[in-house]
Image (cartoon, rainbow, N blue to C red; front, side, top):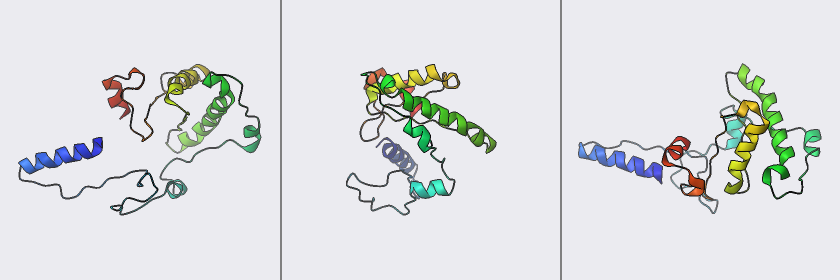
Length: 165
C-alpha cells in the first residue's frame, strides 16, 4: 500500500499542475492473491524459475547430498543452537560461491529465513559471531505474514525502517 499511496500522491501533485501520469507500471515478485489467482491487471508473468534460468536473478546454491546428510536438529530451545549445523553449512556454501560471483562482478548473498521474527535478531548476531566476513554486514528484516515490514516489532526505529525499505 505504501507504493500505491506514493504513486497516488505523485498523480495528485501532477493534477495540480494540469498534468497527468501517462502510465503506471508495477513490478512484483508475487502477482497473485492469497487464493492463488493472478491479478487481473497483470500484463506479464515472469516466473522466478525462468528468471534464474536466464541469469536475471542469482541462482540459489544448495549443499550437496553428503553435506545435507550431516545436518541434525539439536535438542535446544535456543534457535541458533538447534539449527547450528544448518547455519554453519549455509555460511560454508556462501563462502564457496563468493569467488564464482566475484569473477562475474557480482556479490554472493547469504539469505536466511527463520520461522518467527523472534529468532531473527538472534540469528543475525550469531552469523556475525561465527563468520567474521559478515561482521557489520548482516541486515535483519522483520516482516509480517503479508510481507510488510513490521514497524512495531522489536523496537526498530523510523530511520532503520527507512533503510530497510
